[in-house]
Length: 448
Image 1 (spheres, rainbow, N blue to C red):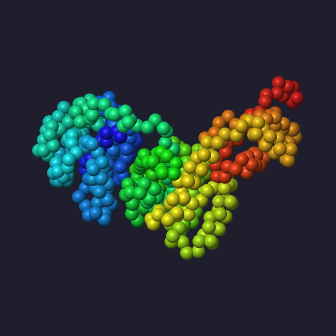
Image 2 (image 1 turned 120 degrees about the vertical axis):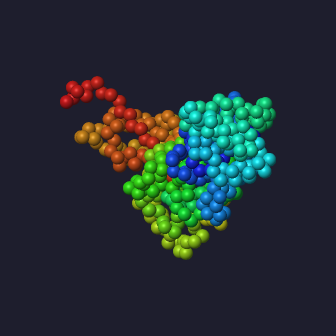
Image 3 (image 1 turned 90 degrees about the horizontal axis):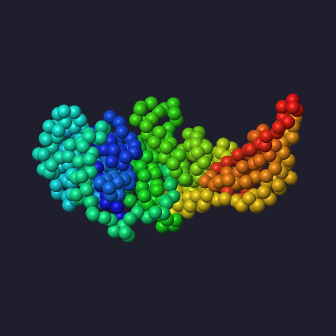
């Protein structure tokens, strides 16, 4: 296991900026709005020359346990319990607050070592501002400016003192690449609840309030049915016209980025509301990005007429999502756990199809049969002659068709080939790419 370092502090002291600085890339959303980070984010990086696991946590606030702030605090406290080192961040420019002092007292009672980080110390007087942090009783503060990079070298040196000399060989990260899986859907569809159900722990903050998850949060997980998974919970995606605040725009951008980086997407749909146009947009976006898709039909336990609800879903998928014909659907209840055990087998099956490559000989036997059954139509009064097909890549399955004027093939004939390929080679719900490559004709101009 890699040494785990958690970054703690009250809201808006610069924890996510420091997280991005230490991770050496922009992972966490940074904004002046307090409380942007509501769930733990993690990244593997190198500090002081050693590989570590870095956790960004929600802002520490004193609040009742049932409130959002209370749940955020519980999540952050859980991060401390699983960490080997804590970076406690205070805002040197704003000065210490009663919340800083209260949580410093709490940290002194924990067994985990703590490094006090005085952030926002840029400028001539920054070092003097950091001196106030001595009164917290957590040792010498390390003065940094996470935004400008000042003092980060000194912070690396301080962290090095708490890291083991060298990780044991068995503790090195497994080089096996995990399946990259994203959970997408509208706000309040149950995405974070589903992630918690899969992990078997309250990893994500959940509740009836829409939009609790504001950033894309990645979790490394070993699925008992299929191996390592990098699971990403995303912020709920609303219609573009309803996205007004800059923070929500950043959350939406992070969700779309997570979708582009995943290999399979779980689209969570509220079975009580049914699949609406926004759900269809998300499915089409996943298809355009070439991702495998599995539909999690959540809140199934609360549906009264299940047969009618399932018929309506099938009708919508058939009429409006033909490009993902045969999309796997798993009815479940993330809240109670019923049906959740069927989800990951469906994900792994979709992933296997997404990776599948058909041999050229087998592909061309299918291709010749398709041409014999329905020859290509004329284009501008001239014959389209298709010669052969290859499959240059999978992830997603991609067919390249070569022939004279192949690029002029009408859309309905392209659908005929794609649907035939999907049916013959049993690839339901998988996005399929069709690339048409026409051969040049040196006499084309002379013919005119």
